[in-house]
Length: 141
Image (cartoon, rainbow, N blue to C red; front, side, top):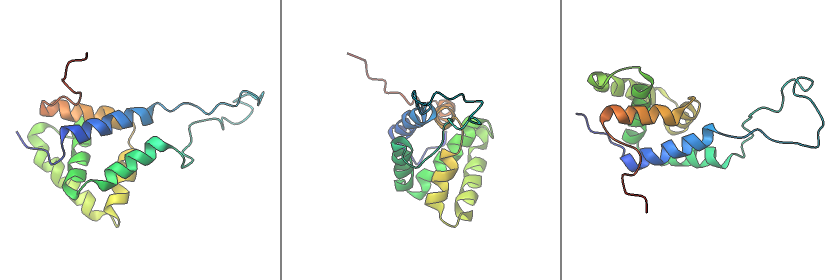
């Protein structure tokens, strides 16, 4: 079984934050009296740069070292079904090529990962294939 360069705890944190990021609420303006159809559906989820969860995710991913970021990309691909555990080294090598192909690898890795729908679910599925649970196994009091 291959070993991950990124810890289960770090991946668990990213999964939790990615789940928070995925369930944003629509902005509400109860006073507007308008209809979404009439407004051309402008009241949709939009990234206005003030999303604290996205900022926290981006900062956390950017602070990871190169190997951790590469494993994160490969783990997401594994969870997405782009390969199997038997192909882990190939997935990781492809992630290395992608990372090295970026002009600014840290920034572009963040953009790539946060642009992936259901990132948290894909990382959790990838960990499952490693036989690792991302949730803490400690008993709840």
